Length: 306
Image (cartoon, rainbow, N blue to C red):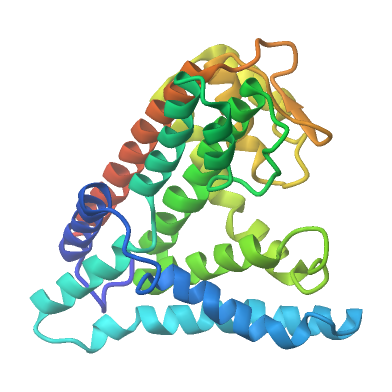
């Protein structure tokens, strides 16, 4: 823990305060949300490269993948310039609360769960768009359930574990740099039109999530320990294209005893029953317990360093 920007006890209170803001105050509007601004900056930086030749797209994409996280980390340094310490801590608390999204993740998953329980498949499909990039228009009820469960498991890493992991290591600059890396991957790091432009962002996101994804898997298991889930995880964690996403998703499949399938891509927990709407709610409870465990662990670590 970097000691020059905040003492370990201050870092603990900053984290606890940020967690309470996230859980009880909700997300800021997009017009003023830092992550939304990161997305706008990413789009502005990448726009001249949309039609560039492949070599230029690769080089330009690599520069974008370095510039935005570096700039975001720089913004995360601003509280160090603020006095007195109490005001600095309050500012840090507010800024850190925007770097993770436990409440928003739970709300998005619950919308899908509520729609499925009401047998409103159309609304459930539309709500799935907020969780993942796949086209939900032809998904069955069980496939929508699977998409929501997979997204809940994977986003526990992206939205909770990884930002706080980098906060513990590098303070607010680390959390904000990670959020920029993850935003770039979400915008550019996929197959299709921007594949070469987003290759550097995708690889950087893979690297940044290498440890957090495994930590997330452990936290999910600790939230609902089950020996058979370990077998599913060991067997299926490497079936996804991403080197990281399969770990928490396979663990969640084992914990819920369901098969999670993305048609044409992977099948986790093959042979287990298809998920139902109640399994989405069960997954959310596991995610919330795992997130709480992680917040307590990081807060205790910061306090212990005192």
